[in-house]
Amino acid sequence: MPMSPRWRGLLLTAPALALVAFAGGALLLAGRGSLADGLGRGWSLSAYAGLLRDPAFADSLLLSLKIATLSTVASAVLALAVVGAVSGSRRGRAALETAARATLAVPHLLAAAAFALLLSGSGLISRLTHAAGWTDGPADFPALVAGSAPSAVLLAYVWKEAPFVAIMLLAAYTPAVRDLENAVRTLGAGRLRRLRHVTLPLLAPALTEACLLVFAFTFAAYEAPALLGATVPRALSVDAVELYRSVELDDRPAALALAVVIGLVIALVALAAAAISRRLLLARTGP
Amino acid sequence: MRRALHSAGFAMLTLWIAAPLLPLLIWAFAGRWVYPALVPQDFSLHAWGQSAAPQQRVIAATGTSLGLALTTAMTATALGALAARGLVLYRPPAAGLVRLLLLAPVLVPPFALAVGVQEVFVRAGLSDQPAGVALVHLVPALPYTVLVMIGGYATYDLRMEQTARTLGASRTAVLRHVTLPALAPALLASATLAFLVSWSEYLMTVLVGGGVVTTLPLLLFATAAGSGNQALTAVLGILTVAPPVLLFGVSAALLRRHRAVWTDPDPSPSSAAPGIERRP
Image 1 (tube, rainbow over the protein chains, first blue to last red):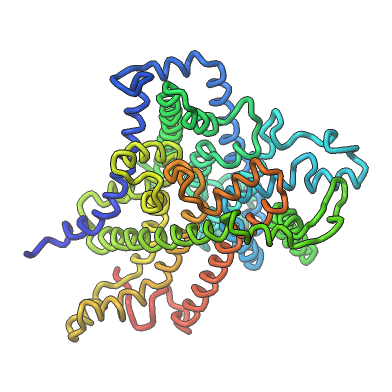
Image 2 (spheres, chains in turn brown, cyan):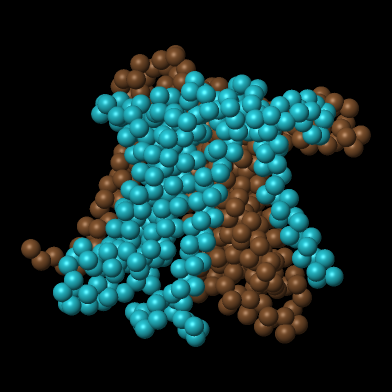
């Protein structure tokens, strides 16, 4: 039976779309579970009311927002600086690309485990500061792991994500961008003005996309805060997993409600990123 | 001055990669390494022997990890290739929306996906099964394979297939001698990324596999979080990081060789094979 090629194209995407539909259905079921009462039946907002009453929830939400925002900003700034520094030399770009790809292949969980060995009180850095005479013992070394500030979590994330942002920026840093930079340089624009009026606007779409991916990942990920974070307050994802594994029946809707909260925050950030992208596009092409 | 800057930059990149991996390498071969010593008091292979012992389940977990990652790599790449073929070559209705839907899972929080999938699997009897875990791994892997295969099909010419068919080649022969060789680099890059996604996955494997489906990341997390056995943590870490790094290196080398063979000696704007003009 002949079929118009356009519908044939849609048919070819069907298996992949079915997988996405399966994931979407699963997310809807998780949302439905968060709206049940303690016994998992009927419809009730008690899980969300419980979250609002719990002072630890606000702390966890703030901590997760802090981790994601700081990781994203630090990774973006670092990647921009490094890409800007090597942009002039082909060898520099190649070296950066190789180094960034090597970091990309390292699983997040492994990065977290390795940073624990590096940054803990008896870790390698602490031994180095002791050898240099700066600290007297493990207790004297700043609590980067499981301390009140999520320092080790942030360091592990920046180590993993800055190279990722750099790769996205390098891909957007086409020869055309370099030509434009050279053109405004011959017209007498200094380094800062080149950055502000040429480089940043041209790299902005790629940077926005990269920042969204980094934020979504670091906001929801479990491994690094679970291994490197403090027990109080805990990141949202760590809290959610603990609740999900608890034997108390009415903790289950609460865990699913946390999953919904995590999803909603990421959805909001994605919408914001989409709005920024559209404005960037309009600014470049005109309405 | 320039040379000095180059060397400094190169040293910083090396330090960046080495910083977390160095303690891993030392700990893996350390027998006793008590604070504040900068080097271990004695070296030993004890942790490696420990990881080979059957009760540690490391060898079995490596097998499970490999099986899941290979399954994910092949299935996700096939799904991505089919979808990209439909999107790029046939321009179906609502192509933009379909593309967006296929890339959306990259933003899905793993915890939410895993607990939702558990709701489905408990009813379908798929929970605590490797097949269920493999199905969950497909979701985050799909966007990467779709994106890479869309790139691969962007320079693909459907007329090559039609020509081969006109000359009497069977569908299978066309797939083997025309389609797959032309897409080989994209297929390899796509499979590598999907492999990495599955190989690194921790949280969804724990929740959907119920701790029964044991992969290397599960053992690594348990050892790093609760045992205090740094040497074994380091060994498991090396076992976790070596395969993907090797895979990335090998596939990058293969892609470079492929490009060297296929590129035109005289520089032309197209990256396609010589003698084939790309579609406008």
